[in-house]
Length: 255
Image 1 (cartoon, helix red, strand yellow):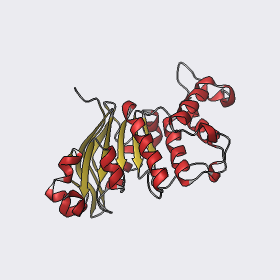
Image 2 (spheres, one colour):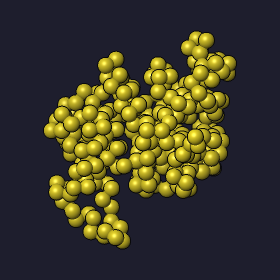
Image 3 (cartoon, one colour):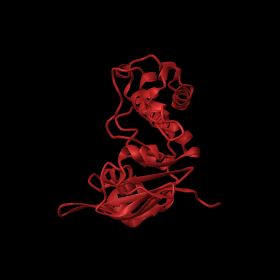
């Protein structure tokens, strides 16, 4: 079966002065796959996600989303083109309710167009499209019973679920998830792992995560970065057995 490539990094490089943070990366992310990127601190993983999402401009190379070159596009434009992103630090509106957070994200899809130039004038409360997008995102993330709770009163794990719900409300086809399990206890981590597995059929997922048990359980493809370079990419079994990966990062885990 052929893979449907939704996101591609082509010879992607980022230099900060004399430091090369990302060096000539070639990677692809396909629908119905979780493609995890791992590596020690300072490997360039976060810089890579910034380049893919438009938060940083590459020094050279390009990024393709849904077959279109999006290199140099703004994060807002890239989001509207079908990419959703979560960050290492939870990024939600704490004083607002769960429903208000997700509804605001859904409203981002109601942008003016030649066919609908008055989109910004719709009342969010009565707009069926916004309502349905928000509701579907909350159902997927299992937050329907928390609609009226202010985000600041959610647990850490629920706030991470909410951030993903906000991404889903923008109808992305690609999800960039930066350490979604960070700081979670066992029960919260299990819920997040279940959620990520349910997201896979309709999305290409880039997962940056330090919880190796979760990575091994979830990843269809696993790529390893060290010092800004890609040293290996393959299945979990291939990466676990890779001697250079063992030496650089996994240690006894791959033995």
